[in-house]
Image (tube, rainbow, N blue to C red; front, side):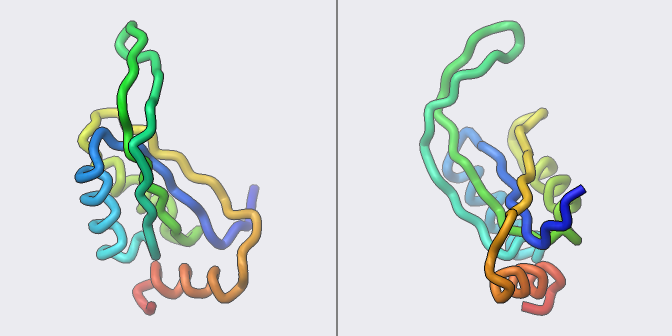
Length: 110
């Protein structure tokens, strides 16, 4: 099991607006210290028995280990899709000052 202090929780959305809604909500709720939105990207996928293709917007959220699971659940609640992609990756290394900021912010102290 990883002991990462900082995590990146990522999801994709169908529109820039839906990515912004998620990003603003979880940062305001202090579940993420910050968010980045990128896109559009072309996605090719298998869904409901068919090959699909479409544009998506990626939202990457920086959070602490302490609230990672709550953040993932909240992203899923806010997401416009019934079964969204929500993944988390540990940040293998970052400056201690950055990790401290993320932890302080997501603890409601930043």
